Length: 112
Image 1: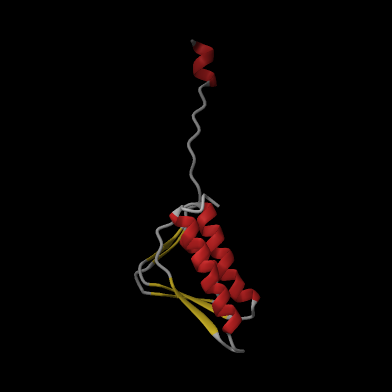
Image 2 (image 1 turned 90 degrees about the vertical axis):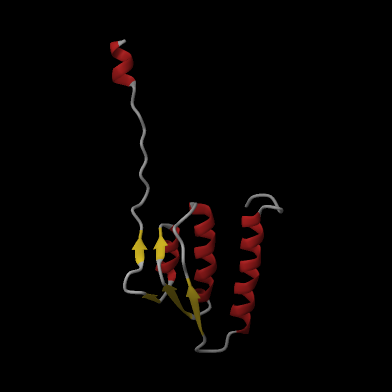
């Protein structure tokens, strides 16, 4: 994680405590419901968020995610943790993966 004064770190720690409080106070048959809107982001931040959502499943709580507009890339990864996904009819869910362009100048350098 980045330094202590980093906003992402503070948010992660705050959310981790929220999940802990919910899981500890849950009664049998309780369910968690998350409204998720995300255009994506870094693997590390969404991996950590998905790990927090997995804690609900590990505690035998059902998890449902609701997407009103967009759950792309890391948001889609967070949706995949859920038992149920509820989405509006025109919501966009999914990920195209990672596209990387790596120029290869070897042939060009051989000619010069």
